Image 1 (tube, protein in one colour):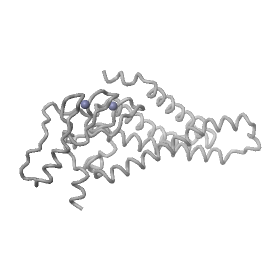
Image 2 (cartoon, rainbow, N blue to C red; image 1 turned 45 degrees about the vertical axis):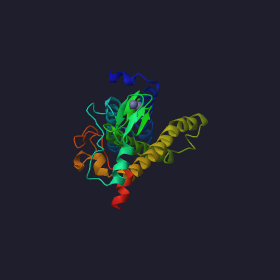
Image 3 (tube, rainbow, N blue to C red; image 1 turned 60 degrees about the vertical axis):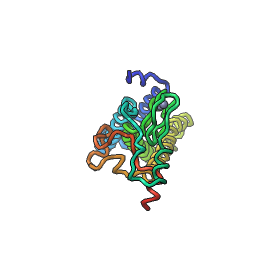
Image 4 (cartoon, rainbow, N blue to C red; image 1 turned 90 degrees about the vertical axis):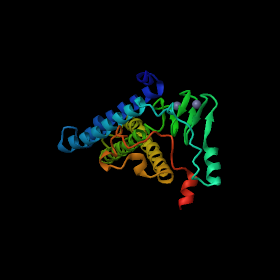
Length: 247
Ligand SMILES: [Zn+2]
Ligand SMILES: [Zn+2]
């Protein structure tokens, strides 16, 4: 049962962190900065709630989507006689067999020891979603990282604005300062970690395949994590030596 994936300590920690950041942003930062019931406060609370909701939705899609199984009918296509001998040898070399599953692995398919199976276009096994990031949920994972990064930076900016406008001569008690340090540290840390992760995946996509290949040809559907109708069966890709031959 895929819902059982939610029964893990890292996922519980993610929910806890999301709830904490949401609470701090609305009921500490915005409340202290402009007041939650003011028009500015309502606007910022709505924008942040939308970002938080979309992050949560993408998180669910990441956890519940099967990252991709090798089709049972998959047979390595190494008999293409239109290829040159050199390309033919390369093709054979890339057809690997999983010793554990005893099945052929298409390009970019790897065996995950945690999931105990082969995963199509495996990126990595992510303990925070208790699932592999693979062919069918890579888009949802990227959107999750994107929206979580934007939400964290948004929260960080509001927190900094709140701290800067505070009159610390009046509110300078040490226990209050400690409260703000406890609230601000996770927000700042999360922004830096997620920002780095987002840059890393943008770099991967830019060097490995185009954004359209990953996210789909319709820009209106780029930020819909479950819109993956443009994907094929995940058993063949343009690989590194193909790129070198073209350029
Ligand atoms: Zn395997
Ligand atoms: Zn895995």
